[in-house]
Structures are given as C-alpha cells and as structure tokens.
Length: 216
Image (tube, rainbow, N blue to C red; front, side, top):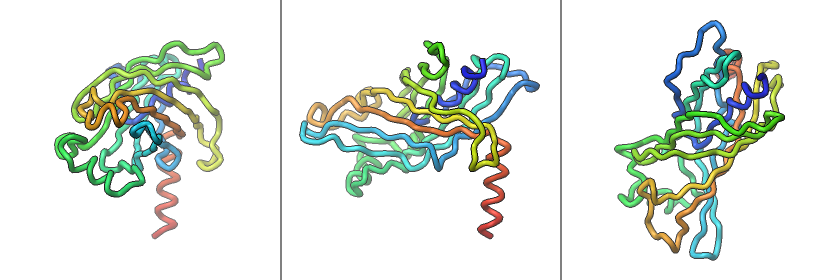
C-alpha cells in the first residue's frame, strides 16, 4: 500500500491541472508539491525525416493530496503555462505563441492534465499507468502515461522530508489539439518524456521561505 501511495505522486505528466472530484478524509490526507526545479516536461518530433528536435516547458507546477488508507482517491493538480515553451529556436518559439495555427495563448494560456485513475500497477509498485485528461488549446483528450517510480524516501535537500521521484512517457498526436500545421512533413506524433520530484507540502513551503529569507 505504501508503494502504491507514492506511485500516485507522479501523474504529471505535462503537465498540466490534475484534479479528481473525490472526497478525501482530512484525518488521513497528505499533501505534496511537485518541485519545479526538478520537474521537467520534454517532447520531440520528426522534422521532414531529417532530424528529431526536442523542446521543453520551463514552468511546471503541481500539487497532490492523497489518503494513506485509500490512494485511489488522490487529487493531483498540475499546470503548465504555454508561454514557458522553449524549442531552443527563438523564431519557432515566437511562431508557436503568436501564429493562429499553433497555440491559442490568449484564450487558453495553460496546458492542464486531470488524473482519473492509476491502473496496471506492477507487483513491486514501481511501474504503473496514469490515466487522465490532457487539455491543450481548450481541447480535452484522454491520455495514458507509462510511469516508473525511481525512488522514494527522505529528501536530503528538504531536511529529510518525505519525497518520491518518477519518470513517465507517452505519445501524443498534436493534430487532435488543433496543432496540425505541416503534418505529415513535420510529424503528427510527438514523444513526451516527464521526470518529477514530489515533496511533502509543509516541508517544501518551509524550505522556500528559508531560501527567500536568505535572499533578502
């Protein structure tokens, strides 16, 4: 049960706002924060068959509430501002954020993901699937993340607070989110890779306050 609890900490995929409208008894609820300094969402595509460029989002935030006695009632929220996209090509960044055939940033400034269930958990609790709703450009589609628990335990950078780290992958078709410019010369399918660290919320907030005080 403990491994499954920590396995639920990942679903970030891309993320994205993950939220489940389920009631979690306050007495057993535990809150976690995705550490944005160690959480990344990266994606790649094929360009005319010649190369496989990569890009990432520079801002990813997320929170998780989970019940020790019933991890299936987890509530996870992750948000990715579209404006934080970084293709490592300034002109392409500008096109993606301003051209009408790409992201509709003014109307839909964030990419969100809402987790719905955790399934197919391996016997050792380290591999599992996260099923949820990804919303891009205001278009919501169900996606499945293939996730792996990398490590769980006290985090040395947060005074030994409970923490867990995960990787996940999925394949998306950008056309279903209204991003079909130049298909098929620029591939419709995009490979998404996610890595994340989740920290117990109170410990995370305390550490952030300490760091802020040191900078003042």
